[in-house]
Length: 218
Image (cartoon, rainbow, N blue to C red):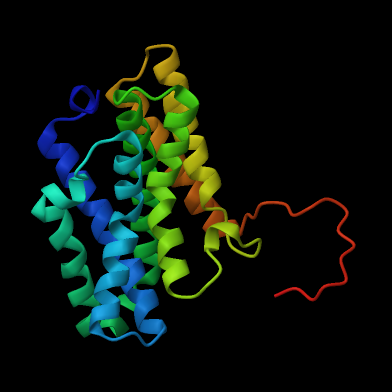
């Protein structure tokens, strides 16, 4: 299905772009946490590849693409190297990095859903793995950095919801056999735009209804 939507070269290029920007976000967090060079490289790799590896292991596409394509493995290292030497400059263009991160989110929630479906999973499971592909690396990044994952924090702008919307759109298109390059592009664009709007207007998911807890918030 992926080959029908995009040529292999286009798909590979889009994957590398998404991997690179995800790796940048992981490396920047490592710098803020005062990690050494090895820690920066590890966090960059995990952030960029964690979601895809999780998906591939679940669907039985082993060894995962991250270990069979040298470009997938080297790209996060290049991003880490860039951050090691130029992180003050990268920090200054953080808003631009966030835009590319949102684009990677949209791309991976679509490609993850389609790849899971190609390997025989149902529509709901495929959409769930599309979400995991998009956000899994960020969750692992935060856990390794000893932080509550942004995905679970109420005080963070919506991140998972745009990916869920994009993956669900793909699943619906698959259900009615209308998934085309245009439709998949629209799903990725929808997730991308929702993420940008969430960052711009600070949209957040609601918390538990009628909270009366006396426990201090963290």
